[in-house]
Amino acid sequence: MARAVSKATLKDVAERVGVSVSAVSMALADHPRIGESTKRRVMLAADELGYVTNAAARALQAKRAGAVALIVPNTSSHVLGHSYFMHVLTGVNEVALSRSVQLVLSTNADELNGQAAYDRVLRSGLVDGAIVTSAAASDPGIEHLANSGLPVVMLGRYPHLPDAVSVWTDDIAGSRAATEHLIEEHGRRHLVHLSGPLDHRSAMDRRDGFAAACAAHGIEARVVEGDYGENSGAAAIERFGDQPVDGIVAANDEMAFGALQALRARGLDVPGDVALIGYDDFGLSRVTTPAISTVHVPAGDMARVAAEQLFLLLEGKQPEPSSTVPLRLELRQSCGC
Image (cartoon, rainbow, N blue to C red):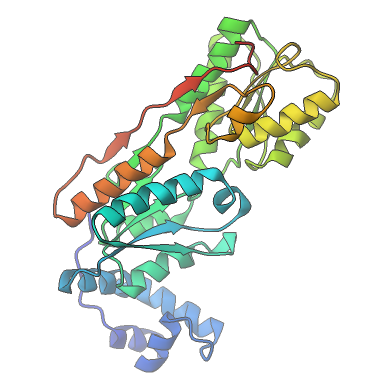
């Protein structure tokens, strides 16, 4: 549920901190004349009093800004450097343009301070609502934003926020299906999962789907954590040493491609020696040799659904809290099909 709008003002924040109203205003705008210690105290007081979030809520009540935000909490390489982001950006922008609404991107270069990406949107009052993607599972800004009063749609699964409007794919089921395919159709028993960064829900869910399939078939579930990058997929192969491996399920196609290259460098045949399945199907998997079997993630469709849900909220309607977009296995040569 959205939090009720309070009457907190700049003056209230100033009195709480013991500084002038103008100092509070400059601190909230991240003005260089205000010291970092004062900025932190102002931000804390504003949050405690509900000023930041309610300022945005009041702006929304006064008039429409004619813009929505896509919030990406940080610009680390496994986020903006990933094809997923371009599919999401394109999908959201298509819907925004169809409504003659501007799309604003809010992000932050420092992965440890992604809160700035949320606060920039909440303080500005310049957007009518927001879509959030690629947030870490433990990101405190997600809950802060969900309770702010600003219409928000989460792109991804956030089980700790069951009342938030979210659009997601069942990555547990997708990864389990890929793993079971290697076991049941190709007889692979020595499996390894190349996971994404395990502070992200998609990586956790893909790992858990792999583990569930292994457990159901009495197979050891070995997991090597990567960062969704090609190099981490290649590095994972070196970590196996002489351990037997005849099947790999990667959490995305970039890591699968890195693993494919490393396996070849070791003189191993894919799929003869090692069967391989990736995840995402954003283009790379179709042009490799062999082509990479993968789980197709309809990221553009997810983004369009999320944007439509956001516009329902802006129209005063209440969409379903949770919407799932189906996945499918795309079977190619790398698994032996």
